[in-house]
Image (tube, rainbow, N blue to C red):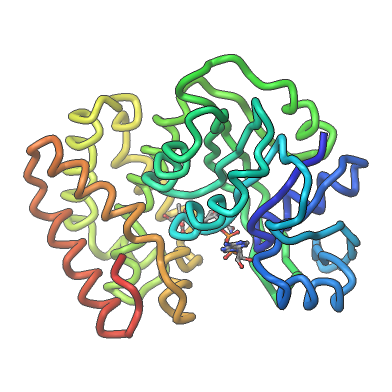
Length: 303
Ligand code: NAD
Ligand code: KPL
């Protein structure tokens, strides 16, 4: 069965290249004729691994192309996911399955609401990749992708394709817990690196601020039915700060490069969930406001 992939950016290309080079059929779905022409001119997707570049001439098409889609990997940013899936709805075959590779929370539900008859598998990835140029992606950090379906615990047969492609992955009945845990880690680290203009390691100089955010995030996780995601959160945040001390967080890099952040699906989602549960989290709310003001000042979207 063909893997259709919408979002041929960093992670989408990383998946596409590994699936295609291991003999699995892949089709890229590009946004419009301009992108399709640019892709055809480039001659395919290039993946750079350990300094070596390989090009993969994976077929690409427009969303309006005829033909059913049975398996769709959605690898756009969280704020683009719903709009990217919209023009593909009429192509989805009965029983189609989607894999939603977005960080944070909120976008997955928005997509799933449009697709009451399709299966939506959620993913949480720690793999690292970045775009060096259009259709040229660097594999920057080995990691792991957790997959799961909160509505249906049985693992899908296509995990064998990921095995064949050498994509490190695991199936979990608790994908929401994994997504909440990563969201909490990202909320405790990423906005502070932006506001203090520092690498992750720089947060070691702000232990009280990190501590109070972890306490509020743990309270939120407990309140919204994710106690496992709260377990040992502060210790893990401190471990990640130390282990990634020399790195700039993904949000820091987005802001530094003038790119839109996924704030609404991280801090925004955390604060909205707290409000829904009538929970006051003053430090988290203040962090959200300070981050929005910072983005606004730089002409970046605050959602
Ligand atoms: P990216 O910006 O590199 O790629 C997204 C791609 O989607 C872009 O090529 C964009 O043109 C395309 N796109 C957007 N709207 C589209 C549309 N309507 N039709 C077709 N294509 C469309 O993003 P990324 O870094 O691969 O991130 C994807 C998700 O994975 C994000 O939620 C991110 O937080 C998460 N993530 C990324 C990494 C990483 O290392 N890059 C690691 C872990 C998680
Ligand atoms: O995932 C991250 C990011 O930068 O987005 C880490 C390294 C965990 C920091 O939150």
